Amino acid sequence: MTVLAALLYAKEQMDHSLAIRFSCRMASCGSCGMKINGLPRLACYTQVSDFGNSPITVEPLDHYPLVRDLVTDFHGFFSTHQSVKPFLVRRDVAEQETYESEYSQSQRELDNFLQFSYCIKCGLCNAACPTVATDPLFTGPQALGQAYRYTADSRDEGGNARLNVIDQEHGVWRCHFAGACSFVCPKGVDPALAIQRLRRLVVTPSGAKRAGGPLMPKHTVQ
Image (cartoon, rainbow, N blue to C red; front, side, top):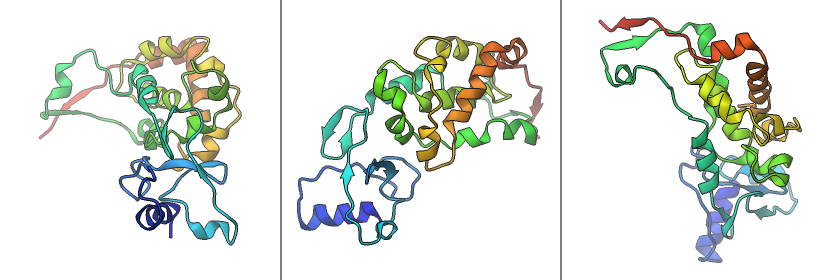
């Protein structure tokens, strides 16, 4: 039995008013994030048996406005995520709307960002981050991790614009590398590593140039 299943049983059999957010039940949507025995986790991925005979305490995630019970408000979270342009930026917008061509990408180019593309936006990293706790203006590990994911993508040409967004007092330089974000990530994204690499891009001229997004050869699909 998962912690989510136990909570749903409690809601059905004991307290119908219990507010829980969930959807996929398979650790893909990130909706059921909560603190379980003090640590941010996905309730659908956490087994009751992991705690043996110890009591299990569930609480809403830290650093998010509380809606009710275990439900928190993610509007600010997604707004910050949107601010780092979490999508591929190309100078030629029309080329992204056609199915007649594609961009080639080597395995090495894919490996540069693949790990960071596994983010499911569960918000556990921000809930665990001590800097988010003290600086409400901090961009946060989730958004910074996704800023790197797209900047490192060889198909993208919006890297410089993203670096301008995060190269500020409450951006990439506010992180103290506690590593809590990477510790709690259920998908192994490692936002702390992404932040380190973002800093390198900001301070290294060659890195900033690469972040500008070299034009990729366009191949016609046969």
